[in-house]
Image (cartoon, rainbow, N blue to C red; front, top):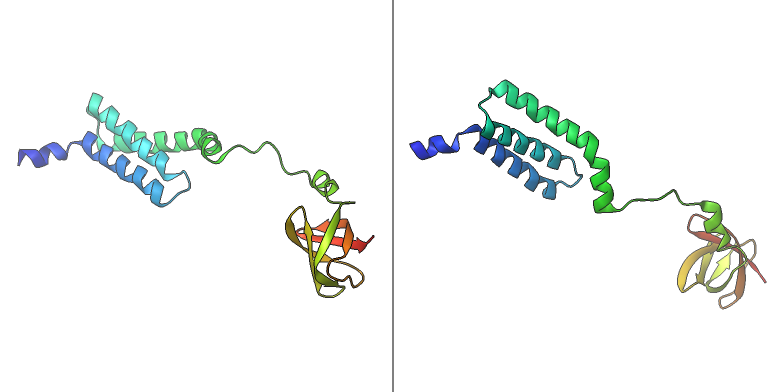
Length: 152
């Protein structure tokens, strides 16, 4: 009976709750649940040091979890997923296509389009005129993943 009473101590319960929440973070990724696991471990540490009531434990749990979530999530997400320096500059990206040459891999028709090979990759292509397979074309524009081409 004493062993069960030992496991019902608040610091052990909070530690186990925190451990379960951290394990759940691996199952449900998003880097949110882990902060509640850390909050539970903070409460476990406080309970180990001092004897506090359940209301105080819950307040410490909520405050530490939410504060750590608000302050650390963006920073940790950047560490794990990588920081992005800036948004993609579409004009600069477009300049590396315009004026370049590509080879038609599937016949291009004005209505259905076709495919061209550019830098070793096949791209959807559109043109104002019909262009036969094997023809070298010039890229004049880009619309998402579709290149606009014309005969040389």
